[in-house]
Amino acid sequence: MLLAVRAQVLVSPRSRRRDAETLGDVVRRASGPAVTRSPRTPLNRKAVGDCAAGMAEVGSRLSAPGPVSARGVALVGRLLCDGTGPLYNRRLGRRQLEAALRDIMVGLGEDLVGPGTGSAVGAPSS
Image 1: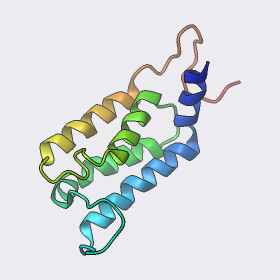
Image 2: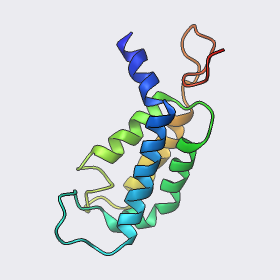
Image 3: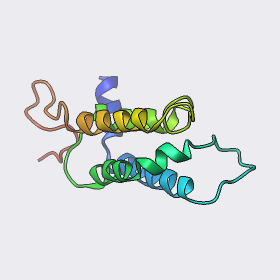
């Protein structure tokens, strides 16, 4: 029951919009001038710059109407929050970020039909 509630929160338009905006903000921050003193975790600016198009694609998918998988949205959240992941860890390169973005795009389309429900997760109910 709690897992189903969490999935509904993840795929809500508000949550998806927030994640899409955050991805766009990350790309903007990475392409702008470096800030020497900031409480934010430093970005892997090179990898983010190299993968800006892929990040925009994920943001567009999140912003688009229609259902997405809770798994994919959870992967976006993990990417954004993991300070040791490819968005922030400068020892990880473009390939790791590209792989994470591919996994997210696949994940956003997975398991859209809930078990025994016959309707897509995140789809409007009738």
